[in-house]
Amino acid sequence: MRITMLGTGAAFVDPDRAQSGILVTLDNGRNYLFDCGAGITRNMVRANVSPADVSTVFLTHLHHDHICDFPLFVITGWMWDREDSPLVIGPKGTKHFVTNLFEGGAFKADFDARSSYPRRQKNISAIRPKVIEASPGVAYEDEHVRMICDWVEHIPREVSECFGVRFEAEGKVIAFSGDTSPCESMVRLAKDADLLIHECTFPESFIEHRRRTGVGTFAHTSPTELGQLATRAGVKRLLPTHFGHFDSTHALIKRVATHHFPVEQMGPHLMDEMVRDIRKHYSGPLQLAADLLRVDV
Image (tube, rainbow, N blue to C red; front, side, top):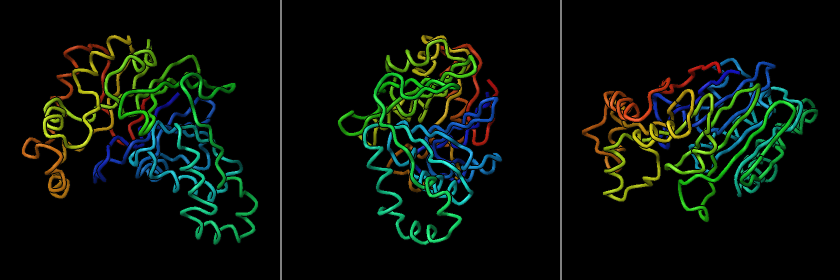
């Protein structure tokens, strides 16, 4: 099994990272995509994987940095001769999101134009995703994989459901947090996982700044908390991701971040600080995620 980190960024458009997206490729060649933020389709192609060859998409929650490339992913698969409907699994609201994209939705003009061609009529099912709105428990299972999901603690559930997921295949376990603060459900999902891919959006000082100033959500997992969670779950390997631009030296990112972060503290040195804080409680194999990083499990 191979993991390709298609995107490791967060909510801002970042010149150095795509938004959230993880591709899991089984030894038999089947592909499963987790989240589909901005830049994911392009990075998928850069990784030499066709969107037409990705059978299943799991959306952990419906925030823009986890879903906004989904229309491009579907349309590209259609144009590149996907033969079947992609399966989309996600929280409550996923059916509404998907239904309002293509036929009769936001991309109606594009659909009407392309579907007039006989070749696109032949694979019209590719632009009609099948949708499963998941509940905690087994969200999907076939002869190759099993996906178990549970609610995690990011924002109030009545506003938007957010899932973490446990992916079991080929005798291995991968756990992915989506966005969350530390919670017992994520410890359960990650129990004895071969690889835990977990958000670590901000360093300690930035979380405290956001809590103190009330800017945005601070419902993320700090490096110290992530180290504690990984140790409690007994994970064999840890891959932090979903980095919130705190290490950027890009002038525009720093300008727009003024009201979100302590800009004077931003810089690459914070990645080393993040590792040190994770290491306070976790001593196992650790690697910070980067776009297009490949990990064999």
